[in-house]
Image (cartoon, rainbow over all chains, first blue to last red; front, side, top):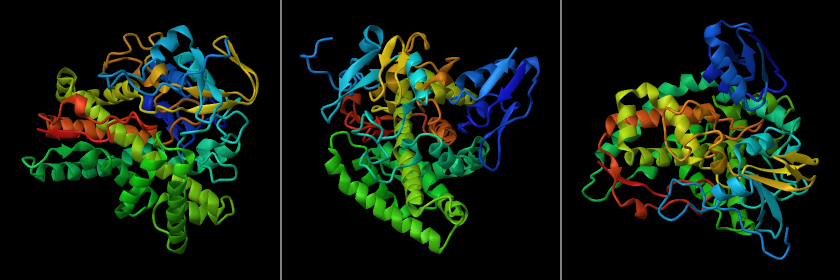
Length: 64
Length: 407
């Protein structure tokens, strides 16, 4: 799994952080998404897919 | 389509005797006419989207504008911003790039880790309000859970974040109550809007004179000082955050508490295993879908949604309660199921770039309140028959006007 994020699209809703806190965080200065792990372990894949699905700004792209 | 029959208004009332059902008529529209036309108060009309997929498509597409001055925007009964040209609007009523610029100035204050750091404070505030409820002599009259807990908690929390004196909360509650009433005309709402703006104006001036450790002060000392915000922008920020932070969570607290009182099996499961509360809150948000008047958009281009062409300059109203009961996304959608695997897919906070900025805070408040109420008041129940509870069918944000309880 390869994750890319689009900071320009991110609206800082934080849903990804709730769903996959080991993969996503929010920047201290402005709350925009921070990708902690672009190629997470298989154990994280379901959570990452869920984060991409519920991201309101479609800022998370997942390639598998 | 016939042009002689008058268009129906936006469905607003749940069926009689079913206060937790979405407004009557939405389920039929979702099945038979997922993009229908509804009449507006001003004599115009707008599209009404009732299917989950269409609602996400509309709210996720910036060709649908949030700018209340855009041609075709379905004004009337909206919250937080005046439809009048030139009036101060919050960023919720703006499009990118201005929306993005302004929202990012306050995003960090509501991000997940900030809210988590606030959780002990939310717990303390909740405990104090519960302590006060326990001290009430219930032999005289029942406790109104709305006044005792549901309204004060979010009110205290947002007042703390914004640096607003809590003593003023009666003022905002009265003013936001007027602004969010569906039964009043824009002209009748105008005095409340003027009074709220005057109050906030004074508050912003006080922060300029003596900044504290709060969001408004930071906007003053950083963005305003650097020339990135005008005084009017500061006022619009404060109005938006204050109004948004007051009634929404309060009504979710009231409805959530009531539905758990009436569903003892679910309440028992949650009491036994408090770790279920996270999923329970998502499901309660989906199930109750308290936003009943929008979100609303204006099409900036011709866009096809669910096979229906929406033309540039036409307005769209999104029916959140209907989308969240769409069987195609949520099987057995009319059932409250706190173990529902995709409950978090709900659009109770909206969808797209305008999705609720305060959602992490709302979730934390709901999680804390529900867990605390179940633990401390296991015998809490309505003090009147459910038919006598005054539900907010007259308001933009659904809930209970009052919720008399005993235990």
